Length: 513
Image (cartoon, rainbow, N blue to C red; front, side, top):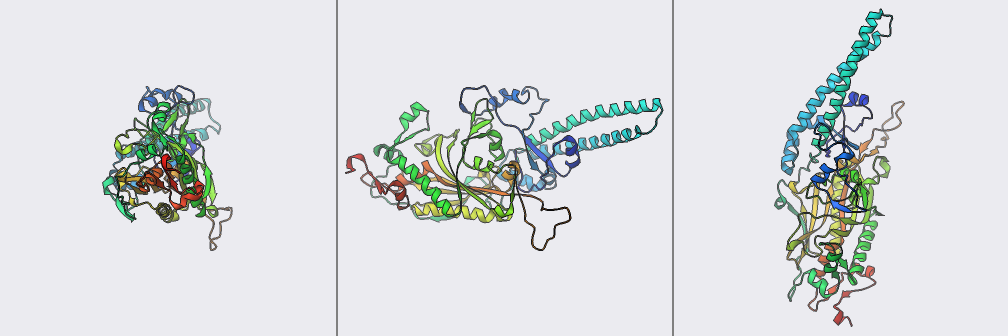
């Protein structure tokens, strides 16, 4: 359910009549929650294609191809712009290796316009007939006009149904069209990503390096076995100093963001599926990363970006209130479908974790500069902890549909013997705000004089950005592996010590005294 950054029209329609008048300028984008299944009390399960097909009865029959799922929300999309910029859109789809079928989108759009023109023609004829019937007429002439009006009405009903069906088909097909891409983004797969910055150098050890799993076991910090019995694989218990370390990381990250003007939040961790989709996450198919709650329009969040994005949903903000900067703590839940192997062992890739997320809503002309600010905050935070890391300008095929541009931070993890992603920062331009309905009203300039009867400027969509301040499990991986000592202890970086009651080192239990 995709919205191009360059879409311009935002008017929505509330009736077919309004729609017909405005469609040539605007087309609203309407979609449906992606699941609805039999209830098992508070059971969550990743969504599959079969689940969608089985659950279709909530909105329409999934076995009846003539019916189209009725969308539950609207987002502005400018299909005329897509048609007029077909080559650029096609190149963008190719560069991202997107599955979007642009030719089908344009074909459906042309069909829809033709039907709309026919609807407008029949409505004009119906109005002519209605006006004729206002005068004095012979009974036979009146009856003739009545029959003509009846025929026009029946023809209109059929065409209006066709119009709505085409609209839904067009919108459903267009959902895979991604945001446009920043011109400086490297084109290609992940290997084409370029290094923006390199900080520090790998730690050197005079002893055999242990990974965080071994360190955690020897320091009695984790219990993966018990968690697997209680919850399943890729869950974990934190114990002893690891618990205070998690709390320290969260409090440190929130405090540092607050110093930079961010408003702290804790968020709901269950949200409506429509909000997930409006933020650009499309948890369909067997590789979904989202846990859905059965027989519900709700699911568990995979990032605080989703509930924070929804705070100002369907709102018009004042320009003076921008930028809005939030730093949110939440637990996150991800299926991690398809993840396997040694590279994902231990805490590196898990189903549930704590995270501190930064989120900004700003004017369109400011989003590039705030993107720079977010990545600089991340780099400052990780530098202060003494991590060795690199910042990457991610290639086009590694961008999610909402991202205009994305920077990833990969830190060196000596126990794993590789770099691992610990953070990312994305500029989503107006992709999310057009779906969430978040606008702002520009303040009139000093030189402008409002026209009579006009007391405010036209609204515009804000730009949204998100960045990870602290993903706790991977931060713990980095801390344990980079600051391990020969005797098996782990030094706590100085910035975290005040948040751990002054604790400077985690020692094995046999040498704590």
